[in-house]
Image 1 (cartoon, helix red, strand yellow):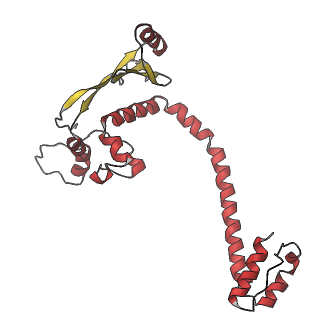
Image 2 (spheres, rainbow, N blue to C red):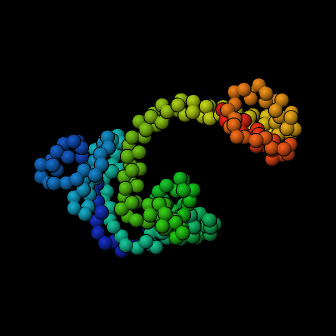
Image 3 (cartoon, helix red, strand yellow):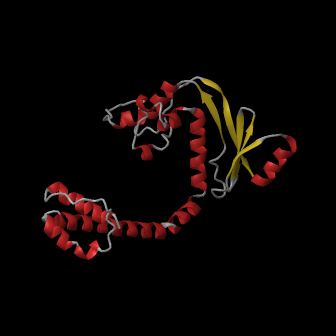
Length: 241
């Protein structure tokens, strides 16, 4: 069931038209009006006209006789009413419906954009100042999010093909990362198990094969046979290569 409550409308934000050909429609608008092209997709375009904009959607992009594009956006001035409407499905989902409940379940409310990315099922007041609250509570951002979602829906096949084409590169990067993590773990474990417990003399004996390749500072003075001295000698020798 769709659930909405009245809010105060203060103007029109945009109108979306079905057109037979986006390029021809843009050429017609260019012949008669001066406008700014806000954005362009494969089967759609958005042009600014004054304080509003027009969305041009190519008819038949979803198949024959499918009408999902024609709509208009109305600007409202009641943030708390919008918040209540956005959060209402989540509130009702947490309550058990009683016999004779006047509100049939489930209730479908306005879309909460990026709810999965934000891991949020509600738009709380604490989120008003960040991107999630602004995206869902400001009409101009909701319009952009809705049109962006529409672009993804229209071009989802091409976008998925492009994503799958990158899987090989992602696997190669993850493989290199796992080898680097293994090398770091083995190096750290070997140092803590075999090098840290050594006495000072044993440390020098164990590292004698690399001492000729290490560039030790001439002014370096070996400390006494203490825990701190062993750490300083080994650190200097290991990092000065």
